[in-house]
Amino acid sequence: MPAQKAAIILAAGKGKRMKSDLPKVLHPIGGKPMIEMLLDRLQPLGFTKTVVVIGHQGEEVRDALAGYAVEFAWQREQLGTGHAVMMAREALEEFSGPILVAAGDVPFLSIDSMARLFAAHAEAEAAATCLSAHFDDPTGYGRIIRDDTGSLLRAIVEHKDASPDILEISEINSGTFLFDAGKLFATLAQLTTDNAQGEYYLTDVVKILHESGDKVAVVAAENPDEVRGVNSPEQLVDLARRLGLDA
Image (tube, rainbow, N blue to C red; front, side, top):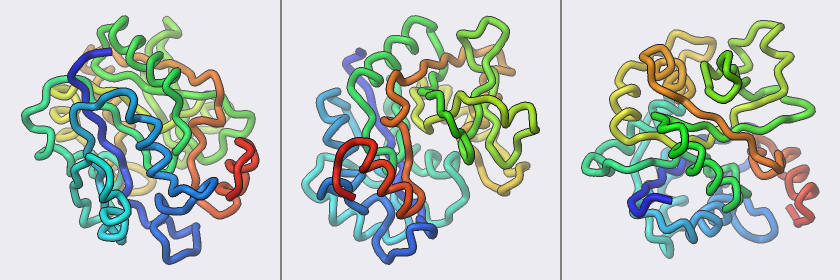
């Protein structure tokens, strides 16, 4: 892995479906908040800088992470994942290495998958690399559209924007990416909100890079459970059960 690498952790969402006053990323699994579990798992990778993007009840998230060596960036308006990553630009304006983008409500990313993500990124000399997974039920997740070679990514289509044929695809976007820093921020500036949710999708960066001739690699997690996110109390309980932990 490269010596200089940064991480952006997205933790600004409201988590309305959690039906709780607690910020979503602070909901515990096995007695520890999800975002802390994620940061603990990423710590051995030795990131030069980690930026946590906060928004809804951000003060609570910031206070909870007081013991971690992280910086914070505010997303005052909830305008999508692409917009959230834009908020970290100032903190990383001097950084030129690879940047990992991960969601604070996906707490079980493994070191093995991270190593494979970095290796695939370097081998393909990619501008971006996506961590995917194959789900028996991919409902709600963006679908992976590979190119004709099968090894590179052409696009990610969000569930709400997908045609019936695309909805048949079982390979999903985990929301975990590795980006070349310069390519990431230059491409974010080209995003629009022309989609079903009226948001700036981080996944549209993939399509823009592909169409500009840049390589976007994709590698699938061997254990799909490690990339499952949490958007509801039911999903929290299900994820805990899958991993043998208490919700």
